[in-house]
Picture 1 (cartoon, rainbow, N blue to C red):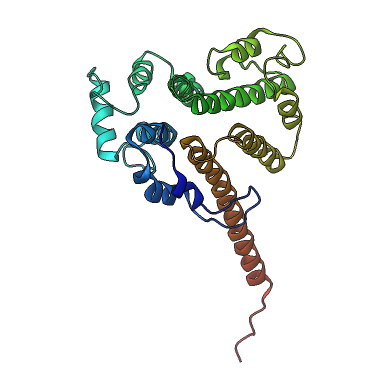
Picture 2: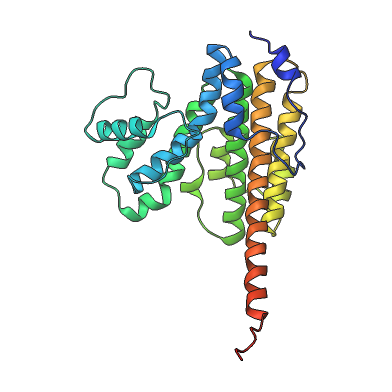
Length: 280
């Protein structure tokens, strides 16, 4: 098992409340990736597949779409892969997203466009989770299972609140997913099996969208802290650092976008209030 003494010792301290970025996710990959062992790089590749998933969906909607460069699969390679899968070809050996073939089989099946628009992203997400859960690294597999459970519980809670069927939106087939699909208990009978159940239910009751998102990210941050407490110079500590950076970057971008929006509104308001003098 590789140890990363110098790498981890050199990482700046970060907090969920940070208002500035010490690294972006892209910076982190560029600077850190080559310092990892070949086996540990594969763990990080699983994380970056989330961007490949988004790129696949974007490409299927618009072949000229601007794709996210943080993915593992280059845009020109993605185009070749999609064409090949449409034609019934097998994926190349070692392809980083083997579940793409299952997704494209489903995509090519006879489904109405309405059904596809509702389930397409969820189906791909389920395949991604199933792939990540098979990782030999227990920390990584646990992280993805925690996220799957968290998302599923929030969806099920919303379904109960607004009285709509969430069967098609619950992903995965673990004990939590099965309980959410079948149980009528207030906590779906999960309080004993999922330690975060009470906290997640409190988050689900939050009505203010931004505050709800912050509480979700705080839950994720706390999970990372608790599950790497005894990991000092391991790949798990490096992986957790990347996940924390993602949370900080997301809020930084949201705050910047909101700030720019407020500034534009302020300028527009000032322009409307200014009275230009009449020409003499």
